[in-house]
Image (cartoon, rainbow, N blue to C red; front, top):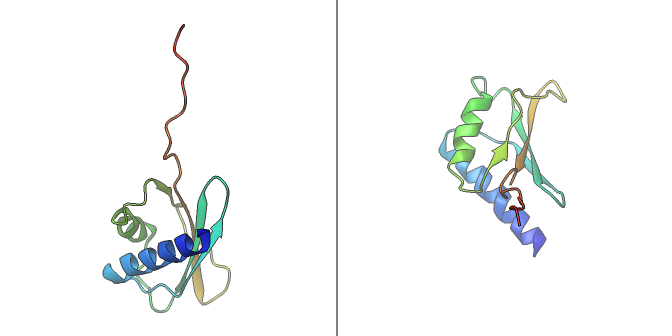
Length: 100
């Protein structure tokens, strides 16, 4: 069931990026007990004007709760830009104990 949830998230992200004109080469989910981390890979030649803000705008349309996006891309190779997004961050309110 977790695998199908991850595939659904991957497809949802890819569709949202495509709707904003952003070509995403690959999406890899890295499940974690606390958060779901997603690594997005972009071909730098297809995305010359790509910005982190454009990706944030696309992700905001997903309705997946809060997420955290780093301020800059990482370049792990000469041809690709990578961005690791953490989905589901800060979605639960902290538990506070009232005075008894």
